[in-house]
Image 1 (tube, rainbow, N blue to C red):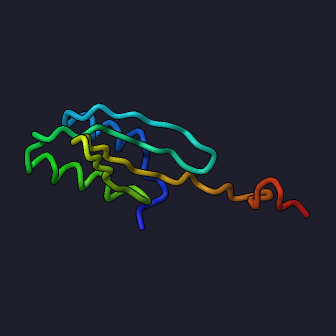
Image 2 (cartoon, rainbow, N blue to C red; image 1 turned 90 degrees about the vertical axis):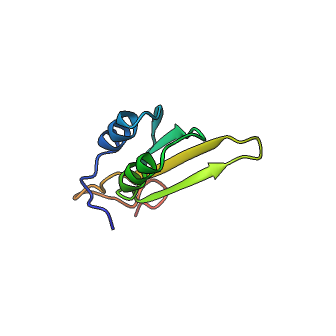
Length: 92
């Protein structure tokens, strides 16, 4: 299980450093990171990419029949330590 302090921004920065263009999207409970993966990505770069996404809570690779490949990763946001964390619709 990845450490809760894993930063989605740091992951996106590392993916950018290996030449991938990343997109981040904030959601209520998680941050998602996506990057298009070119077919010509060298094996050494794949190793670095896999090290980065292994820090995420979930990750995967979506490959289409048209040859496009999108890498995705999800990093959960920390749950508040105090207050009602059950969310709307679950109030007492």
